[in-house]
Amino acid sequence: MSFSIAGKTAIVTGAAKGVGLAIGRQFIDQGANVMFADIDEQGLVDQIGEQASDSDSIRYFAGDLRERLTIANLLSATIDEFDRVDILVNASRQFEPSDPLDPDNDTIEMMLQQNLMTSLRLSQIIARRMIKQANGQDEGTAGSIVNLSSIAARRTQPQMLGYSVSCAALDQMTRSLAVALAPHHIRVNAVAFGSVMSASLKTSLQDHDEYRDEIRHNTPLSRIASPGEVADAVQYLASDGSGFVTGQVITVDGGRTLIDPVSAPVH
Picture 1 (cartoon, rainbow, N blue to C red):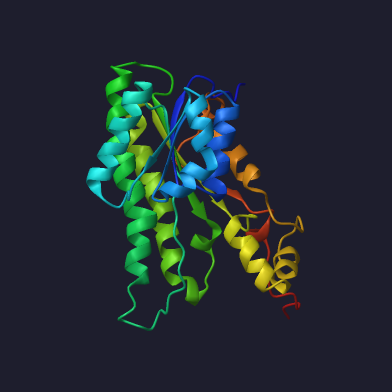
Picture 2: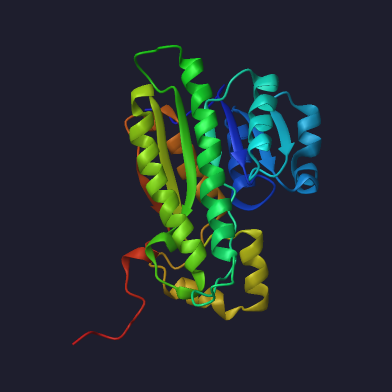
């Protein structure tokens, strides 16, 4: 069984930092062509600009993927550079606290737009390209779509209402698209992860160091994941090694969703 993605072409969104950047870099190391996409053009330049200048397998695209035209332009840019798309990783996510009792708070709508609708629209247009590329092939995988979700979809924290709902919707979108695209040999899966040592978490831990102990205490493996560990799971789902896996949400959380955070015994 091979988890190789060598020679394949991938689009990775949210790729200027954090988990998205780690996924893009791992794909490059594994021999794939990668289009790094993000709204943060300066972040893309800082992180992979020099590599893109020296390598034919690395390109980047800056734009607001909430806009339909930008999505179309991303696909066109990728085809111009690499001729095809084999893998889509929807890693662009947004988190904002939300007040569930404030009808004037628009953060829920904002996160549904960013975390759900952007991934849906991009998946739709890329899937159409994958179908065209397959040209009626009867076997094998015509393409793989991997969505990044969160264990927040299964946890209940009112201040995370918008984020939780958008991730739960993304999980259901993953399952629905998996069934819809299965006849075309396109697989759709997701990775739901817990606490990962991203740039944003590092900043939070600097301000609230006690949060690190809380995470470890509520995680059976007693540590925080590295972005590379999420990238490993994404590569598995993107590769032919998971050729009979579709519609699944793989959890990468060190066992955090397996336990009740209330430590006192129940009588």
